[in-house]
Figure 1 (cartoon, one colour):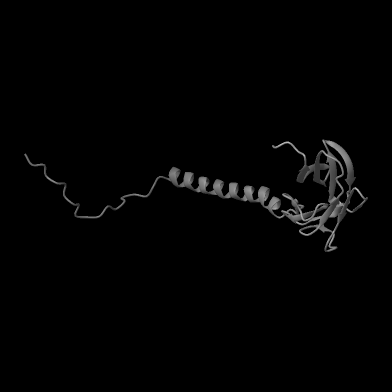
Figure 2 (cartoon, helix red, strand yellow):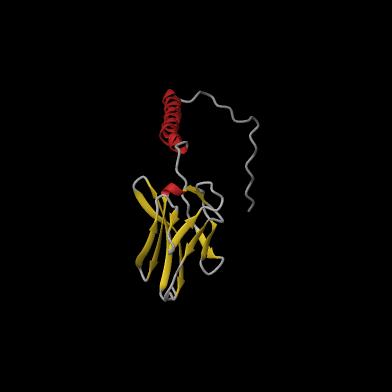
Length: 162
């Protein structure tokens, strides 16, 4: 038995009447509500895009270039020294603290801004006099609008493996 194929219409489809007024009204209102929603999203989120946000120095990477010189090799962003603090500790006991602002020091622990620009950047260095055995750690923290967070850390000496 053979099934006949459907025949092509001789005339293309043409709408006999216009859509009902309720459908066009619904389409208009939904398009208008979508536009209003997009405008409201822009009003809420665009000002956040242009707000001035302070840079964060994460991560700060430091390496020893000599026995006592701990040099900053890279930073995430250049941050003013006035927002940074460094701590030298031995076996989790604080020996010396610098800053904020991060500058100066003593014979045990000191910081030098190598290029003198007032920002923590590559080639700035710490002089660390670690006499005696123990696990030493240099930690750099950034203080900004009341909160403090760790941006870099370097351990040396007889530290247990982590």
